[in-house]
Image (tube, rainbow, N blue to C red; front, side, top):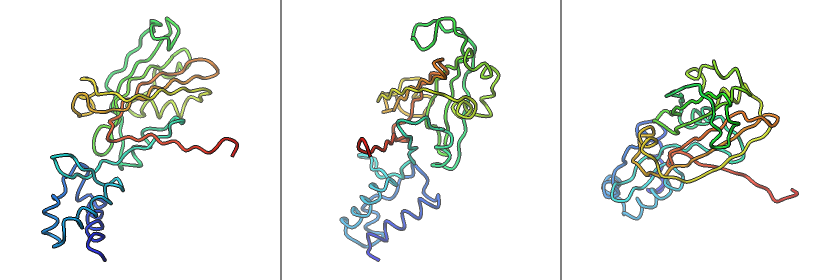
Length: 231
């Protein structure tokens, strides 16, 4: 086995076993040169391959670290965020922060003025920490059973997917910097890159829910597969 392949294989094994968890700083290049008795270019080749595989990431002036696994979500789908996070990280939970009943004032145009809503906020957590902050409104006119739903047992996303068939949806995707509230909830510096996914769903023309999900930019990918028209 070539030295570069050996370096890559041994680092992969440490990551896969959990010996080096996400966020762990791996040895500096000069340390690996000494450890393996090889040229710096050989070490660089092995690390570059690991970066391309998404297993490690280089941070300028800080070093090289084990990458956090990204959650992949289809752009044109309504994903079960909890299932996706659990599949990629090994565990998932939803931490409910707030829940209140209120009437919509119609200011944002998401619901008719006076619509009774359940407003919930919470954090989607993976094995290695927070992935997304969720701020959601659910129309109790369309989904009255949501008033008493236990969102400490199931996240609102999972509950709605399992309980409420939808007939129409719309997404809006934006790149934003973390606000003070989001940075606190996601354990990242303020203004860190984040992905904001807004989603509206309807059932036979009646609005069901509006949600803002703000994802850490280093832990989430959007994926779409397309084919040429007519094929």
